[in-house]
Length: 385
Image: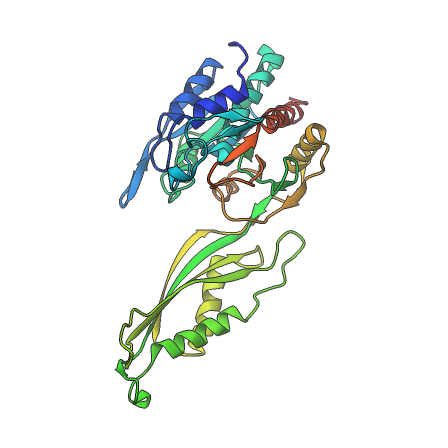
């Protein structure tokens, strides 16, 4: 086993790679070199699809036996925005006042580094007696379309006869402080483009036209004011958010022929995308059938019920931080929505206080604590192995 790795320095090496989606920026190479040095067998997996950027991914595995515990995450980051607005250059990975600054510090290069160091420490302790497997599934496409990333890697694993038995995703799950929250599921998400047809006419003679704006407003009012559910033990109530309304009509005396709106539905496990679409059509049909909808489904809702994986993770978090984490399904989507079809999955990583923000940063103490948590998870998961 190679010399001990410092999770802070590995985090800095990763942050220095400008891996803004879909560019890799050398980040996967940094991780691959680290894991190869620990004895992992690494596979670089570039994938392509028409109309989307090519994306590089990494699957690495130590051992060939079962069970196979997987750490999953991503090295791609969101754009920095106005770099002039950063007090510290976003890819410098500077340490100031006990905090590490840089794009990806929270989401989620420090978690990837903590994964690697936790694995190294665990393997150094277990030595040749370890007969299970530890794997890494790291994509460069989580912040992008998520087409050529985790989903395709999972399909590749199935083709190779690889099986995952449990997985932790290192997304920044904690709202305020490390130890606040573990995600055991996520709401589903779909976006609806609603286009309403009408008949253009003179605004002084509305009875001679068919104003699509009026119909669109009625449809949106019905959709926005009809609750889908009240939530349940593990999920908050389903929400609908109207994100844009566009008519594109510069005239003051003409009613348009078309009106458009887009809205996002975040739904819990009382629904599926199919049932949500039926619900949308029902309310639109009650106003008019002169419309078209185009639906983009980001993911279905899912839940990994509290059990062995969340228990081990909760105990590890409490041991390191002294906090009892909430088991939650709040927030947006993540690549756990793909992994849940293959094995039990839970999410735990850094605080999300600064993710995607200017001057993204995390406390150095949290990087060390997160490494300890992941190491404890491995020790407890493989205790009887």
